[in-house]
Image (tube, rainbow, N blue to C red; front, side, top):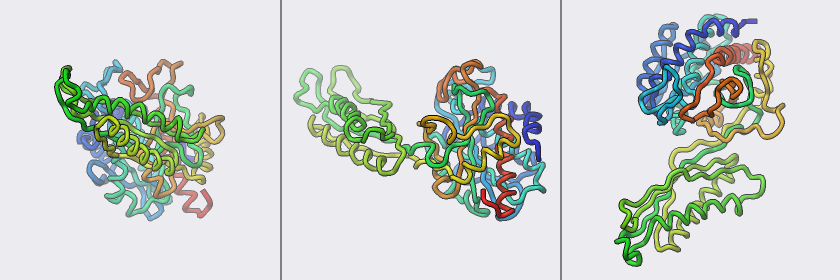
Length: 401
């Protein structure tokens, strides 16, 4: 049995070097040229031939043959000014607050381990380095550019770090079969009124008043129009309107997101949001339109992968759990655009603990002060490499996964 964990631990310094460079040079959405150049150079140094895929993605393959498994890492950061205090902190106004720097570093490490075992692989490992996960556009862009073709992967695996969870660093959880991440939709509600002087409000139509009542009315959707137990979240995160304190605002914009675990609820919420917004605005003599932008479907975990992967990982790792064996609801509230891949081929999502509060890592992901424990990276690196090797072995032998 290949001891990928021992080999990955020997790469700790290299993994940290990757992570810290990436962390100090973040890019947002598709604007990640520095990151892409870095990843390309590192892949080429391993003897691989990375190929551009879509607007800012990269792919590379290890091994040969049509039997193929895909491993993915997302590369983009968030437009959050960093307050972590790390010596390698970003000073650009953007930050790897979601751990994508660790994801990218770990996939580079897995690539090195697999390249060294290339002759032992029973097929091809395709590496997917993806942009724009945070805006739910990168995976779809790479799919349109052919990432799931030539060769076509028969399975896909992704790993996401966690922070603040009550687990020791290095613990891996394989998601249970079915949906583990909700569908997400971003929306903008544009309210149009008519401006006038603040001393004569009867001569105008106050867009702010209409927007305020729309915000409150939409909260009733979950309370009164969804059955008890239905998992859904509607959040309005910004409201902007008006230009002067003594003028009635002629326009206002609300922006937010919905998260749902089934398409029926997703469709119903989007329909009712439009109806409620228009009706409430009309009651205050204004008009409102709801526009839905980028989004992602639910992320579905394949039953066979969810059954097989924990056993494979226990062959080399000391801390592995299956979400199917945990009490309560283990589904997360955060969405993941790798869901587009999961709608096309068998997919499994893994979670890797990268520090908890007992270990001094107290802030959650997406927080400007979040810190992540780099000692977790060898476990994720080894997991990715081992899953690829074992899936190819199993598939090559013709046995059930």
